[in-house]
Length: 287
Image (cartoon, rainbow, N blue to C red; front, side):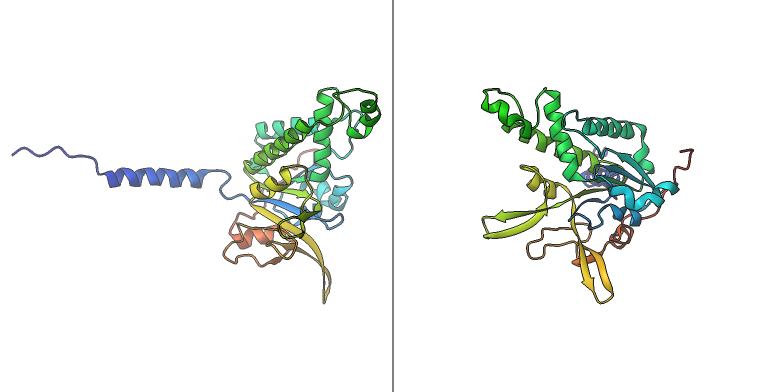
């Protein structure tokens, strides 16, 4: 009796498909990258976190004077800085320059050679976006438009629809950061907001419109940088989970890998979570 034609083993086909999915996940350049939103008061030392980060560090700085604390490391080539710290609402250029530089950096492939990329100063990055939106359409900032509006002028200042566009811009940039083949940190300031549900106040990221809520959801890590008094003096700590009115979260520190309060050391936390923490070769060409 002739042999029956054999049919492919569906289990083998399924196993092959699963293996391909697992391999694609493992090969994805963002699988082992940390993406953190770090919030703190002015002077808490957010920029100084670059000192404890795997080198080289690339900083897009919108925080005036923020990189003064890392000048020595800049001279050594451990930290590379692109500065957009001065801008004018009369002739805004900071966001436009950042966008051009960021797109050029992505095209060049530089991020494969970077340990951590910082977007430092979300609180100043956002006004740069606002001014750029208005400048693009020949409009002027809200503070300058009051008299013109009273006189019957229209189309000046920020419109309601601009706030939605601004939030979309912010989220687009954050998604672009998350997709980079290196660790990323975005720094911002603290906002105190009334929570109508609990009847109290919560402390979270200072951001406009819906981005205040969507940013913490999008970013896998949301940490609060705090200065705390200890028996040995003042120490900086990173809050990684909700405590009282503070809103923080961690995914890489799940299953109690992270304590609620951790020392403000990026390399230490990467190592503790099992993420790559080693330095990469520095760019030591002529400056």
